[in-house]
Length: 333
Image (cartoon, rainbow, N blue to C red; front, side, top):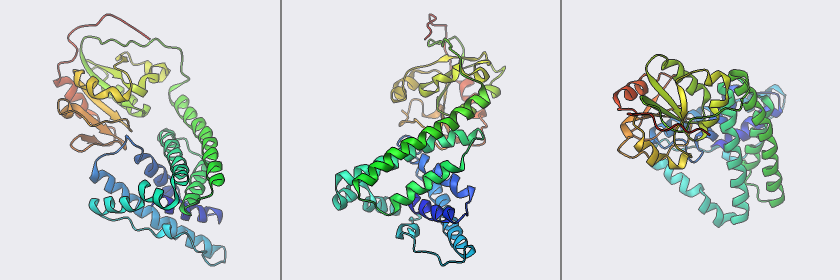
């Protein structure tokens, strides 16, 4: 579906017609299918519906662009008219027919591997585009590059040299994406400074924040001012302590635990609430499923998902939890 949307959008763009709604839908659609982002079937089904609307818009945009240019619409790849099923069982069945194993049997492991390498590269870069977009940074050239790459994949390319070239080009595009993200982060929170971060707990109620979204962390910090709750980062959130606009909050007290893949044991031992932003979630253990929350694109069945950065349920859960009973010996990194 994303390849088809990209192909139609790229065709329209070449004729001078674009739609930001389609651009953003492509980015979010790529990001939400990264390995550790969304696992909740109803939410994924809603994302498919969003992409269905983007698909119709992209096709309409291309037809309008062709008419405006005084030319008939050229034949787009058949995948632009792909109809995603409207049910979970139907989508699972479609996935089996279109998945990696089926394609390896059709075009071989090398071609399939390079196609997937490009697609996964686009997904990873899309995550950073989304983070930058949240903080108000975007670039038409980046949107165009994503559409062109997806259009290339829509044709089921099998030339190894061409595929390799596109994989390298994806890396080049990601350099621009990282510039966008850096501009977004530093523009909002200042330039990172060398900062010692405490990695042992402090006595008191606690919230642990994981994922990547700096704006979510900022919103939580604002909402917990004066509440007697200490906030800890986890995993990839560690660098947040270096940004002046975030470390100015005294109740951002340190980092808890290690990498995201260790979260099950670490969250079970954490005596407070946990907030997952954007991604990096694993199957929660039942012992903490009632005090872990998701927001943004990340989701898990049975876990409370929060919208509009209203983190009052997280705060309530943290206040109800025991928190740390005493200070641990101070240790910083």
